[in-house]
Amino acid sequence: MSKLLGLIVGTFLLIVVGHFFVTPMTQPTMAQKSDHQMWLSHQKDSPIPSPILAQNPRVSITEETVNYGSLNDKLLVGYLATPTDVDRPLPGLIVIHEWWGLNDNIKAMTRRLAGEGYTALAVDLYQGESAETPEKARELVTQAMHQSQALEGNIQAAYQYLDQEQKAPKVGSIGWCFGGTWSLNTALLFPEKLDAAVIYYGGGITTDAEQLKTLQMPILGLFGQQDKNPSVETVKQFEEVLNSLNKSAEIYIYENAGHAFANPSGNLYNAEAAEKAWEKTTNFLAKHLNE
Figure 1: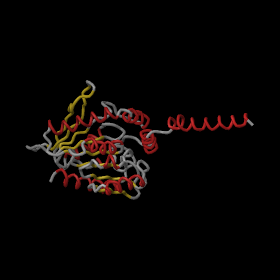
Figure 2: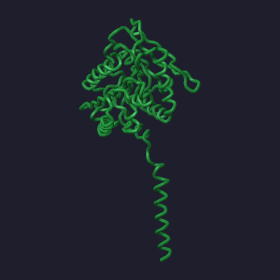
Figure 3: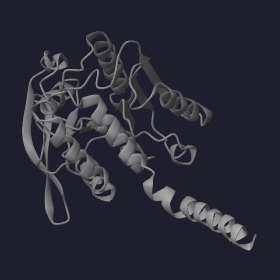
Figure 4: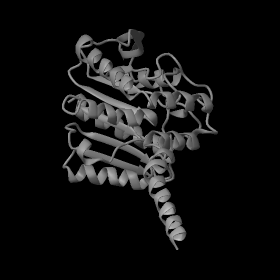
């Protein structure tokens, strides 16, 4: 009887110990979940120019490579585009790349955004690297997501550059995919200073009310109904939390559109959804940055 009781007690203790010490170590983190979902969405994708880049900027653009700060004694090198014939400081845009990195397609999109009347700075959160394959992109995005303090420092330098060096009267952020998450993170970094945030399907968006309650700027969120990164359920929860906090938020979910439907790079493009989202984007930015 005593042996049986000892066996039962021992088994119980193993279960308890396993619950407290084994299970947490084997559960995937939020970053790992987002990384995995990005991989599922892009594993057959490639960083080809998407049709959203077919149209040229509305006005002549001046472009240049710039140093917008430094981090850990390393220069931060980005891509700056601004309308050519302008004699005054323009509103600034922090443009945040997809999981492919700061490639030629993001630069083309930065020029197109500049053509709407902005000083647009495309940041480089991979600090000099970009991907030509999904495997490389996954490697780079995984490394980046495990260096959140460095990414925050990078974004802070970009804001400071637009604010102090370019004298931008207002500053907004925009990003796609990985960059969509970091457009929201930019808003969280500057909850009272950023003037507008555009989020294209950021898989890592938070729905935590304690974080979101700090935001003071208007937010535009553009998502695909068929996307799982983030899911429609997450998007609706995000919207509900923002509304409950009385935040200025416009959230759109496009039918028959999946992840990366408006990316500058890739073959997941959905023309109808992308064109509608672009119109929403330009109207939103004009209202909140140019008025």
